[in-house]
Length: 324
Ligand SMILES: Nc1nc2c(c(=O)[nH]1)N[C@H]1C(S)=C(S)[C@@H](COP(=O)(O)O)O[C@H]1N2
Ligand SMILES: [Mo]
Image (cartoon, rainbow, N blue to C red; front, side):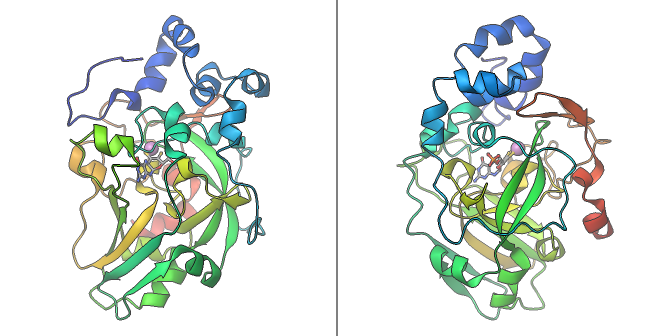
């Protein structure tokens, strides 16, 4: 599957693999035999027949938590989606989570032994009431709901998934930001003993870190995610707590958050530090601005393999256009 050898500071080859592989059908047919079902379903554009044929279907299903209280939650129908929900097994077996591996179709396998309980989230910086929450305590306290959102990865693949979670604004109100709080910085876990990608890729500045302006963080769309498809998050999707900012490229949606910090200055972000010319701080979905190495005009729907036009702000302009 190696298309080219990346320099350590470059984005690894799998960021361009879907498109490159598409362009080379013979190579993808050859690769398909050794790919997991996520990539197989995507690359072959196949439907449930192909999934059912995969040996790994049962194994992937076993990584998906059973539904238990407080899930499933009532879906908030104010947030409409214009495309079918991606099948759960496809979303659960095609992931970006570099702490485990850069192979999207193996994240589910490698993340499965990661321990997500107990889990604490430390909130501090420019706030009047800094606080450390236990994840279970937080889930009890916050106003939970389900929302179906589109998700658009910067690599030009997309999906539609029903997240469960609460607006980040509800959590922000708990800690009372000071007048100096202009940005929100978020940090993922650091545990190389359980995360092979942190151990094997020392050139990345672990732990993963991201950030938003305070206005973006307060926007009603900005969701702290605790579940998906009516149950708690499987580990490959970023359990026990991740972000969803559906008008931005997927890399902003940081997984497995352990720290939230309010700052005066714009925080650094993981991908912007790796390749500033390729990944800006805002990272808003925009079909008119190509990535330096590929077009962003269209996207490939995982699950069906269909290619559709990309929309400005991923279709969420009515909520966020006024921010920019
Ligand atoms: N900590 C962390 N968060 C992360 C990533 C990552 O590698 N590490 N990848 C991002 C990218 S590029 C995308 S597209 C989404 C993928 O989310 P999913 O695997 O649940 O679909 O997670 C984002 N959050
Ligand atoms: Mo992504």
